[in-house]
Structure formats: C-alpha cells, structure tokens
Image 1 (cartoon, rainbow, N blue to C red):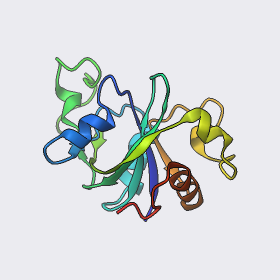
Image 2: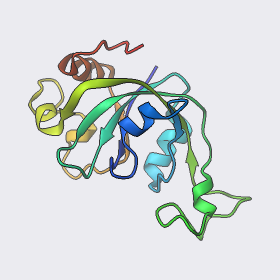
Image 3: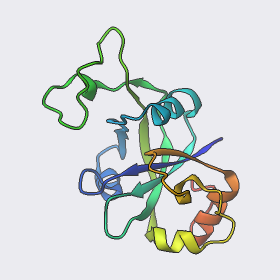
Length: 160
C-alpha cells in the first residue's frame, strides 16, 4: 500500500463536501500537472490511502483521510468548454491528456491538522509538502510520515 496527499481548495470542494455526499466518493478531477497526473496514472492503486489537504485557505491543513477507490480513467472535464478550470483545448477524446481516480472519504480528522502544526512535527523534514517551492497537488507520503501525521491528528494509522 502507498500513501498520498491530495490538495484541493475547500472553497471549490472540501472534505466536508465529500463526507456529506451520498456515496462519499468523487472523481479527483482537474489535475493539470504532468507529474501529478503520472503519479495518479502510474503509482496510485485501489486501496491506497491519502490525506485530504485543504490548500489556498486560512488556515491550510489536512482535513481527513480518503481511500483511492478506482484505477485511473479519462478526466471528462478536459473536454468541457464550460469548465474554466478543467478544459484543455489541446486534449482530444481519442488521445486524452488527463486522467482522474475516484477517492472515497474514510474519516474526517477530529480537527484540521494545520500546516503550521505539521511543520513542527519531528520526522517530517523530507516530506514533499514541507519542501520549499512544493506546489504539487498530488504528492507521495512515506509510511513513516503517514504514521507521524495520523498520531498527531489522533487517528489510527490504519484509518479503516
């Protein structure tokens, strides 16, 4: 099993939105970075776990845990001209540029684990999230980092 951190802006779609949805599952769409796409396409597997991270918010931080619920498939937003964030005029239906996976909410954190708190945790110096200039919306998380963050949030590292 691998672990991930997936960033989203809560003003667009929050963990609470996912948690309250009928199936607690959504397509992780509109990822428009090749490195993030490649991680989703090549490395994510059904059953992997991820942190649901609220970015571009005040405060930023991890709101909960999700499970990867599908393999990669074509992200339909790339073909939707009305979708300002997702539309990609260079992408073609017979050769799509972008993919998505489904994520399912597993559990909310008791409270948002803020970035300022994460920065203070020992053992996370190599975590992608904490690297200078790191803006990747899909990031790998090591098993040790996963355990440290779950402990700090007061949840089981197995999360199920």
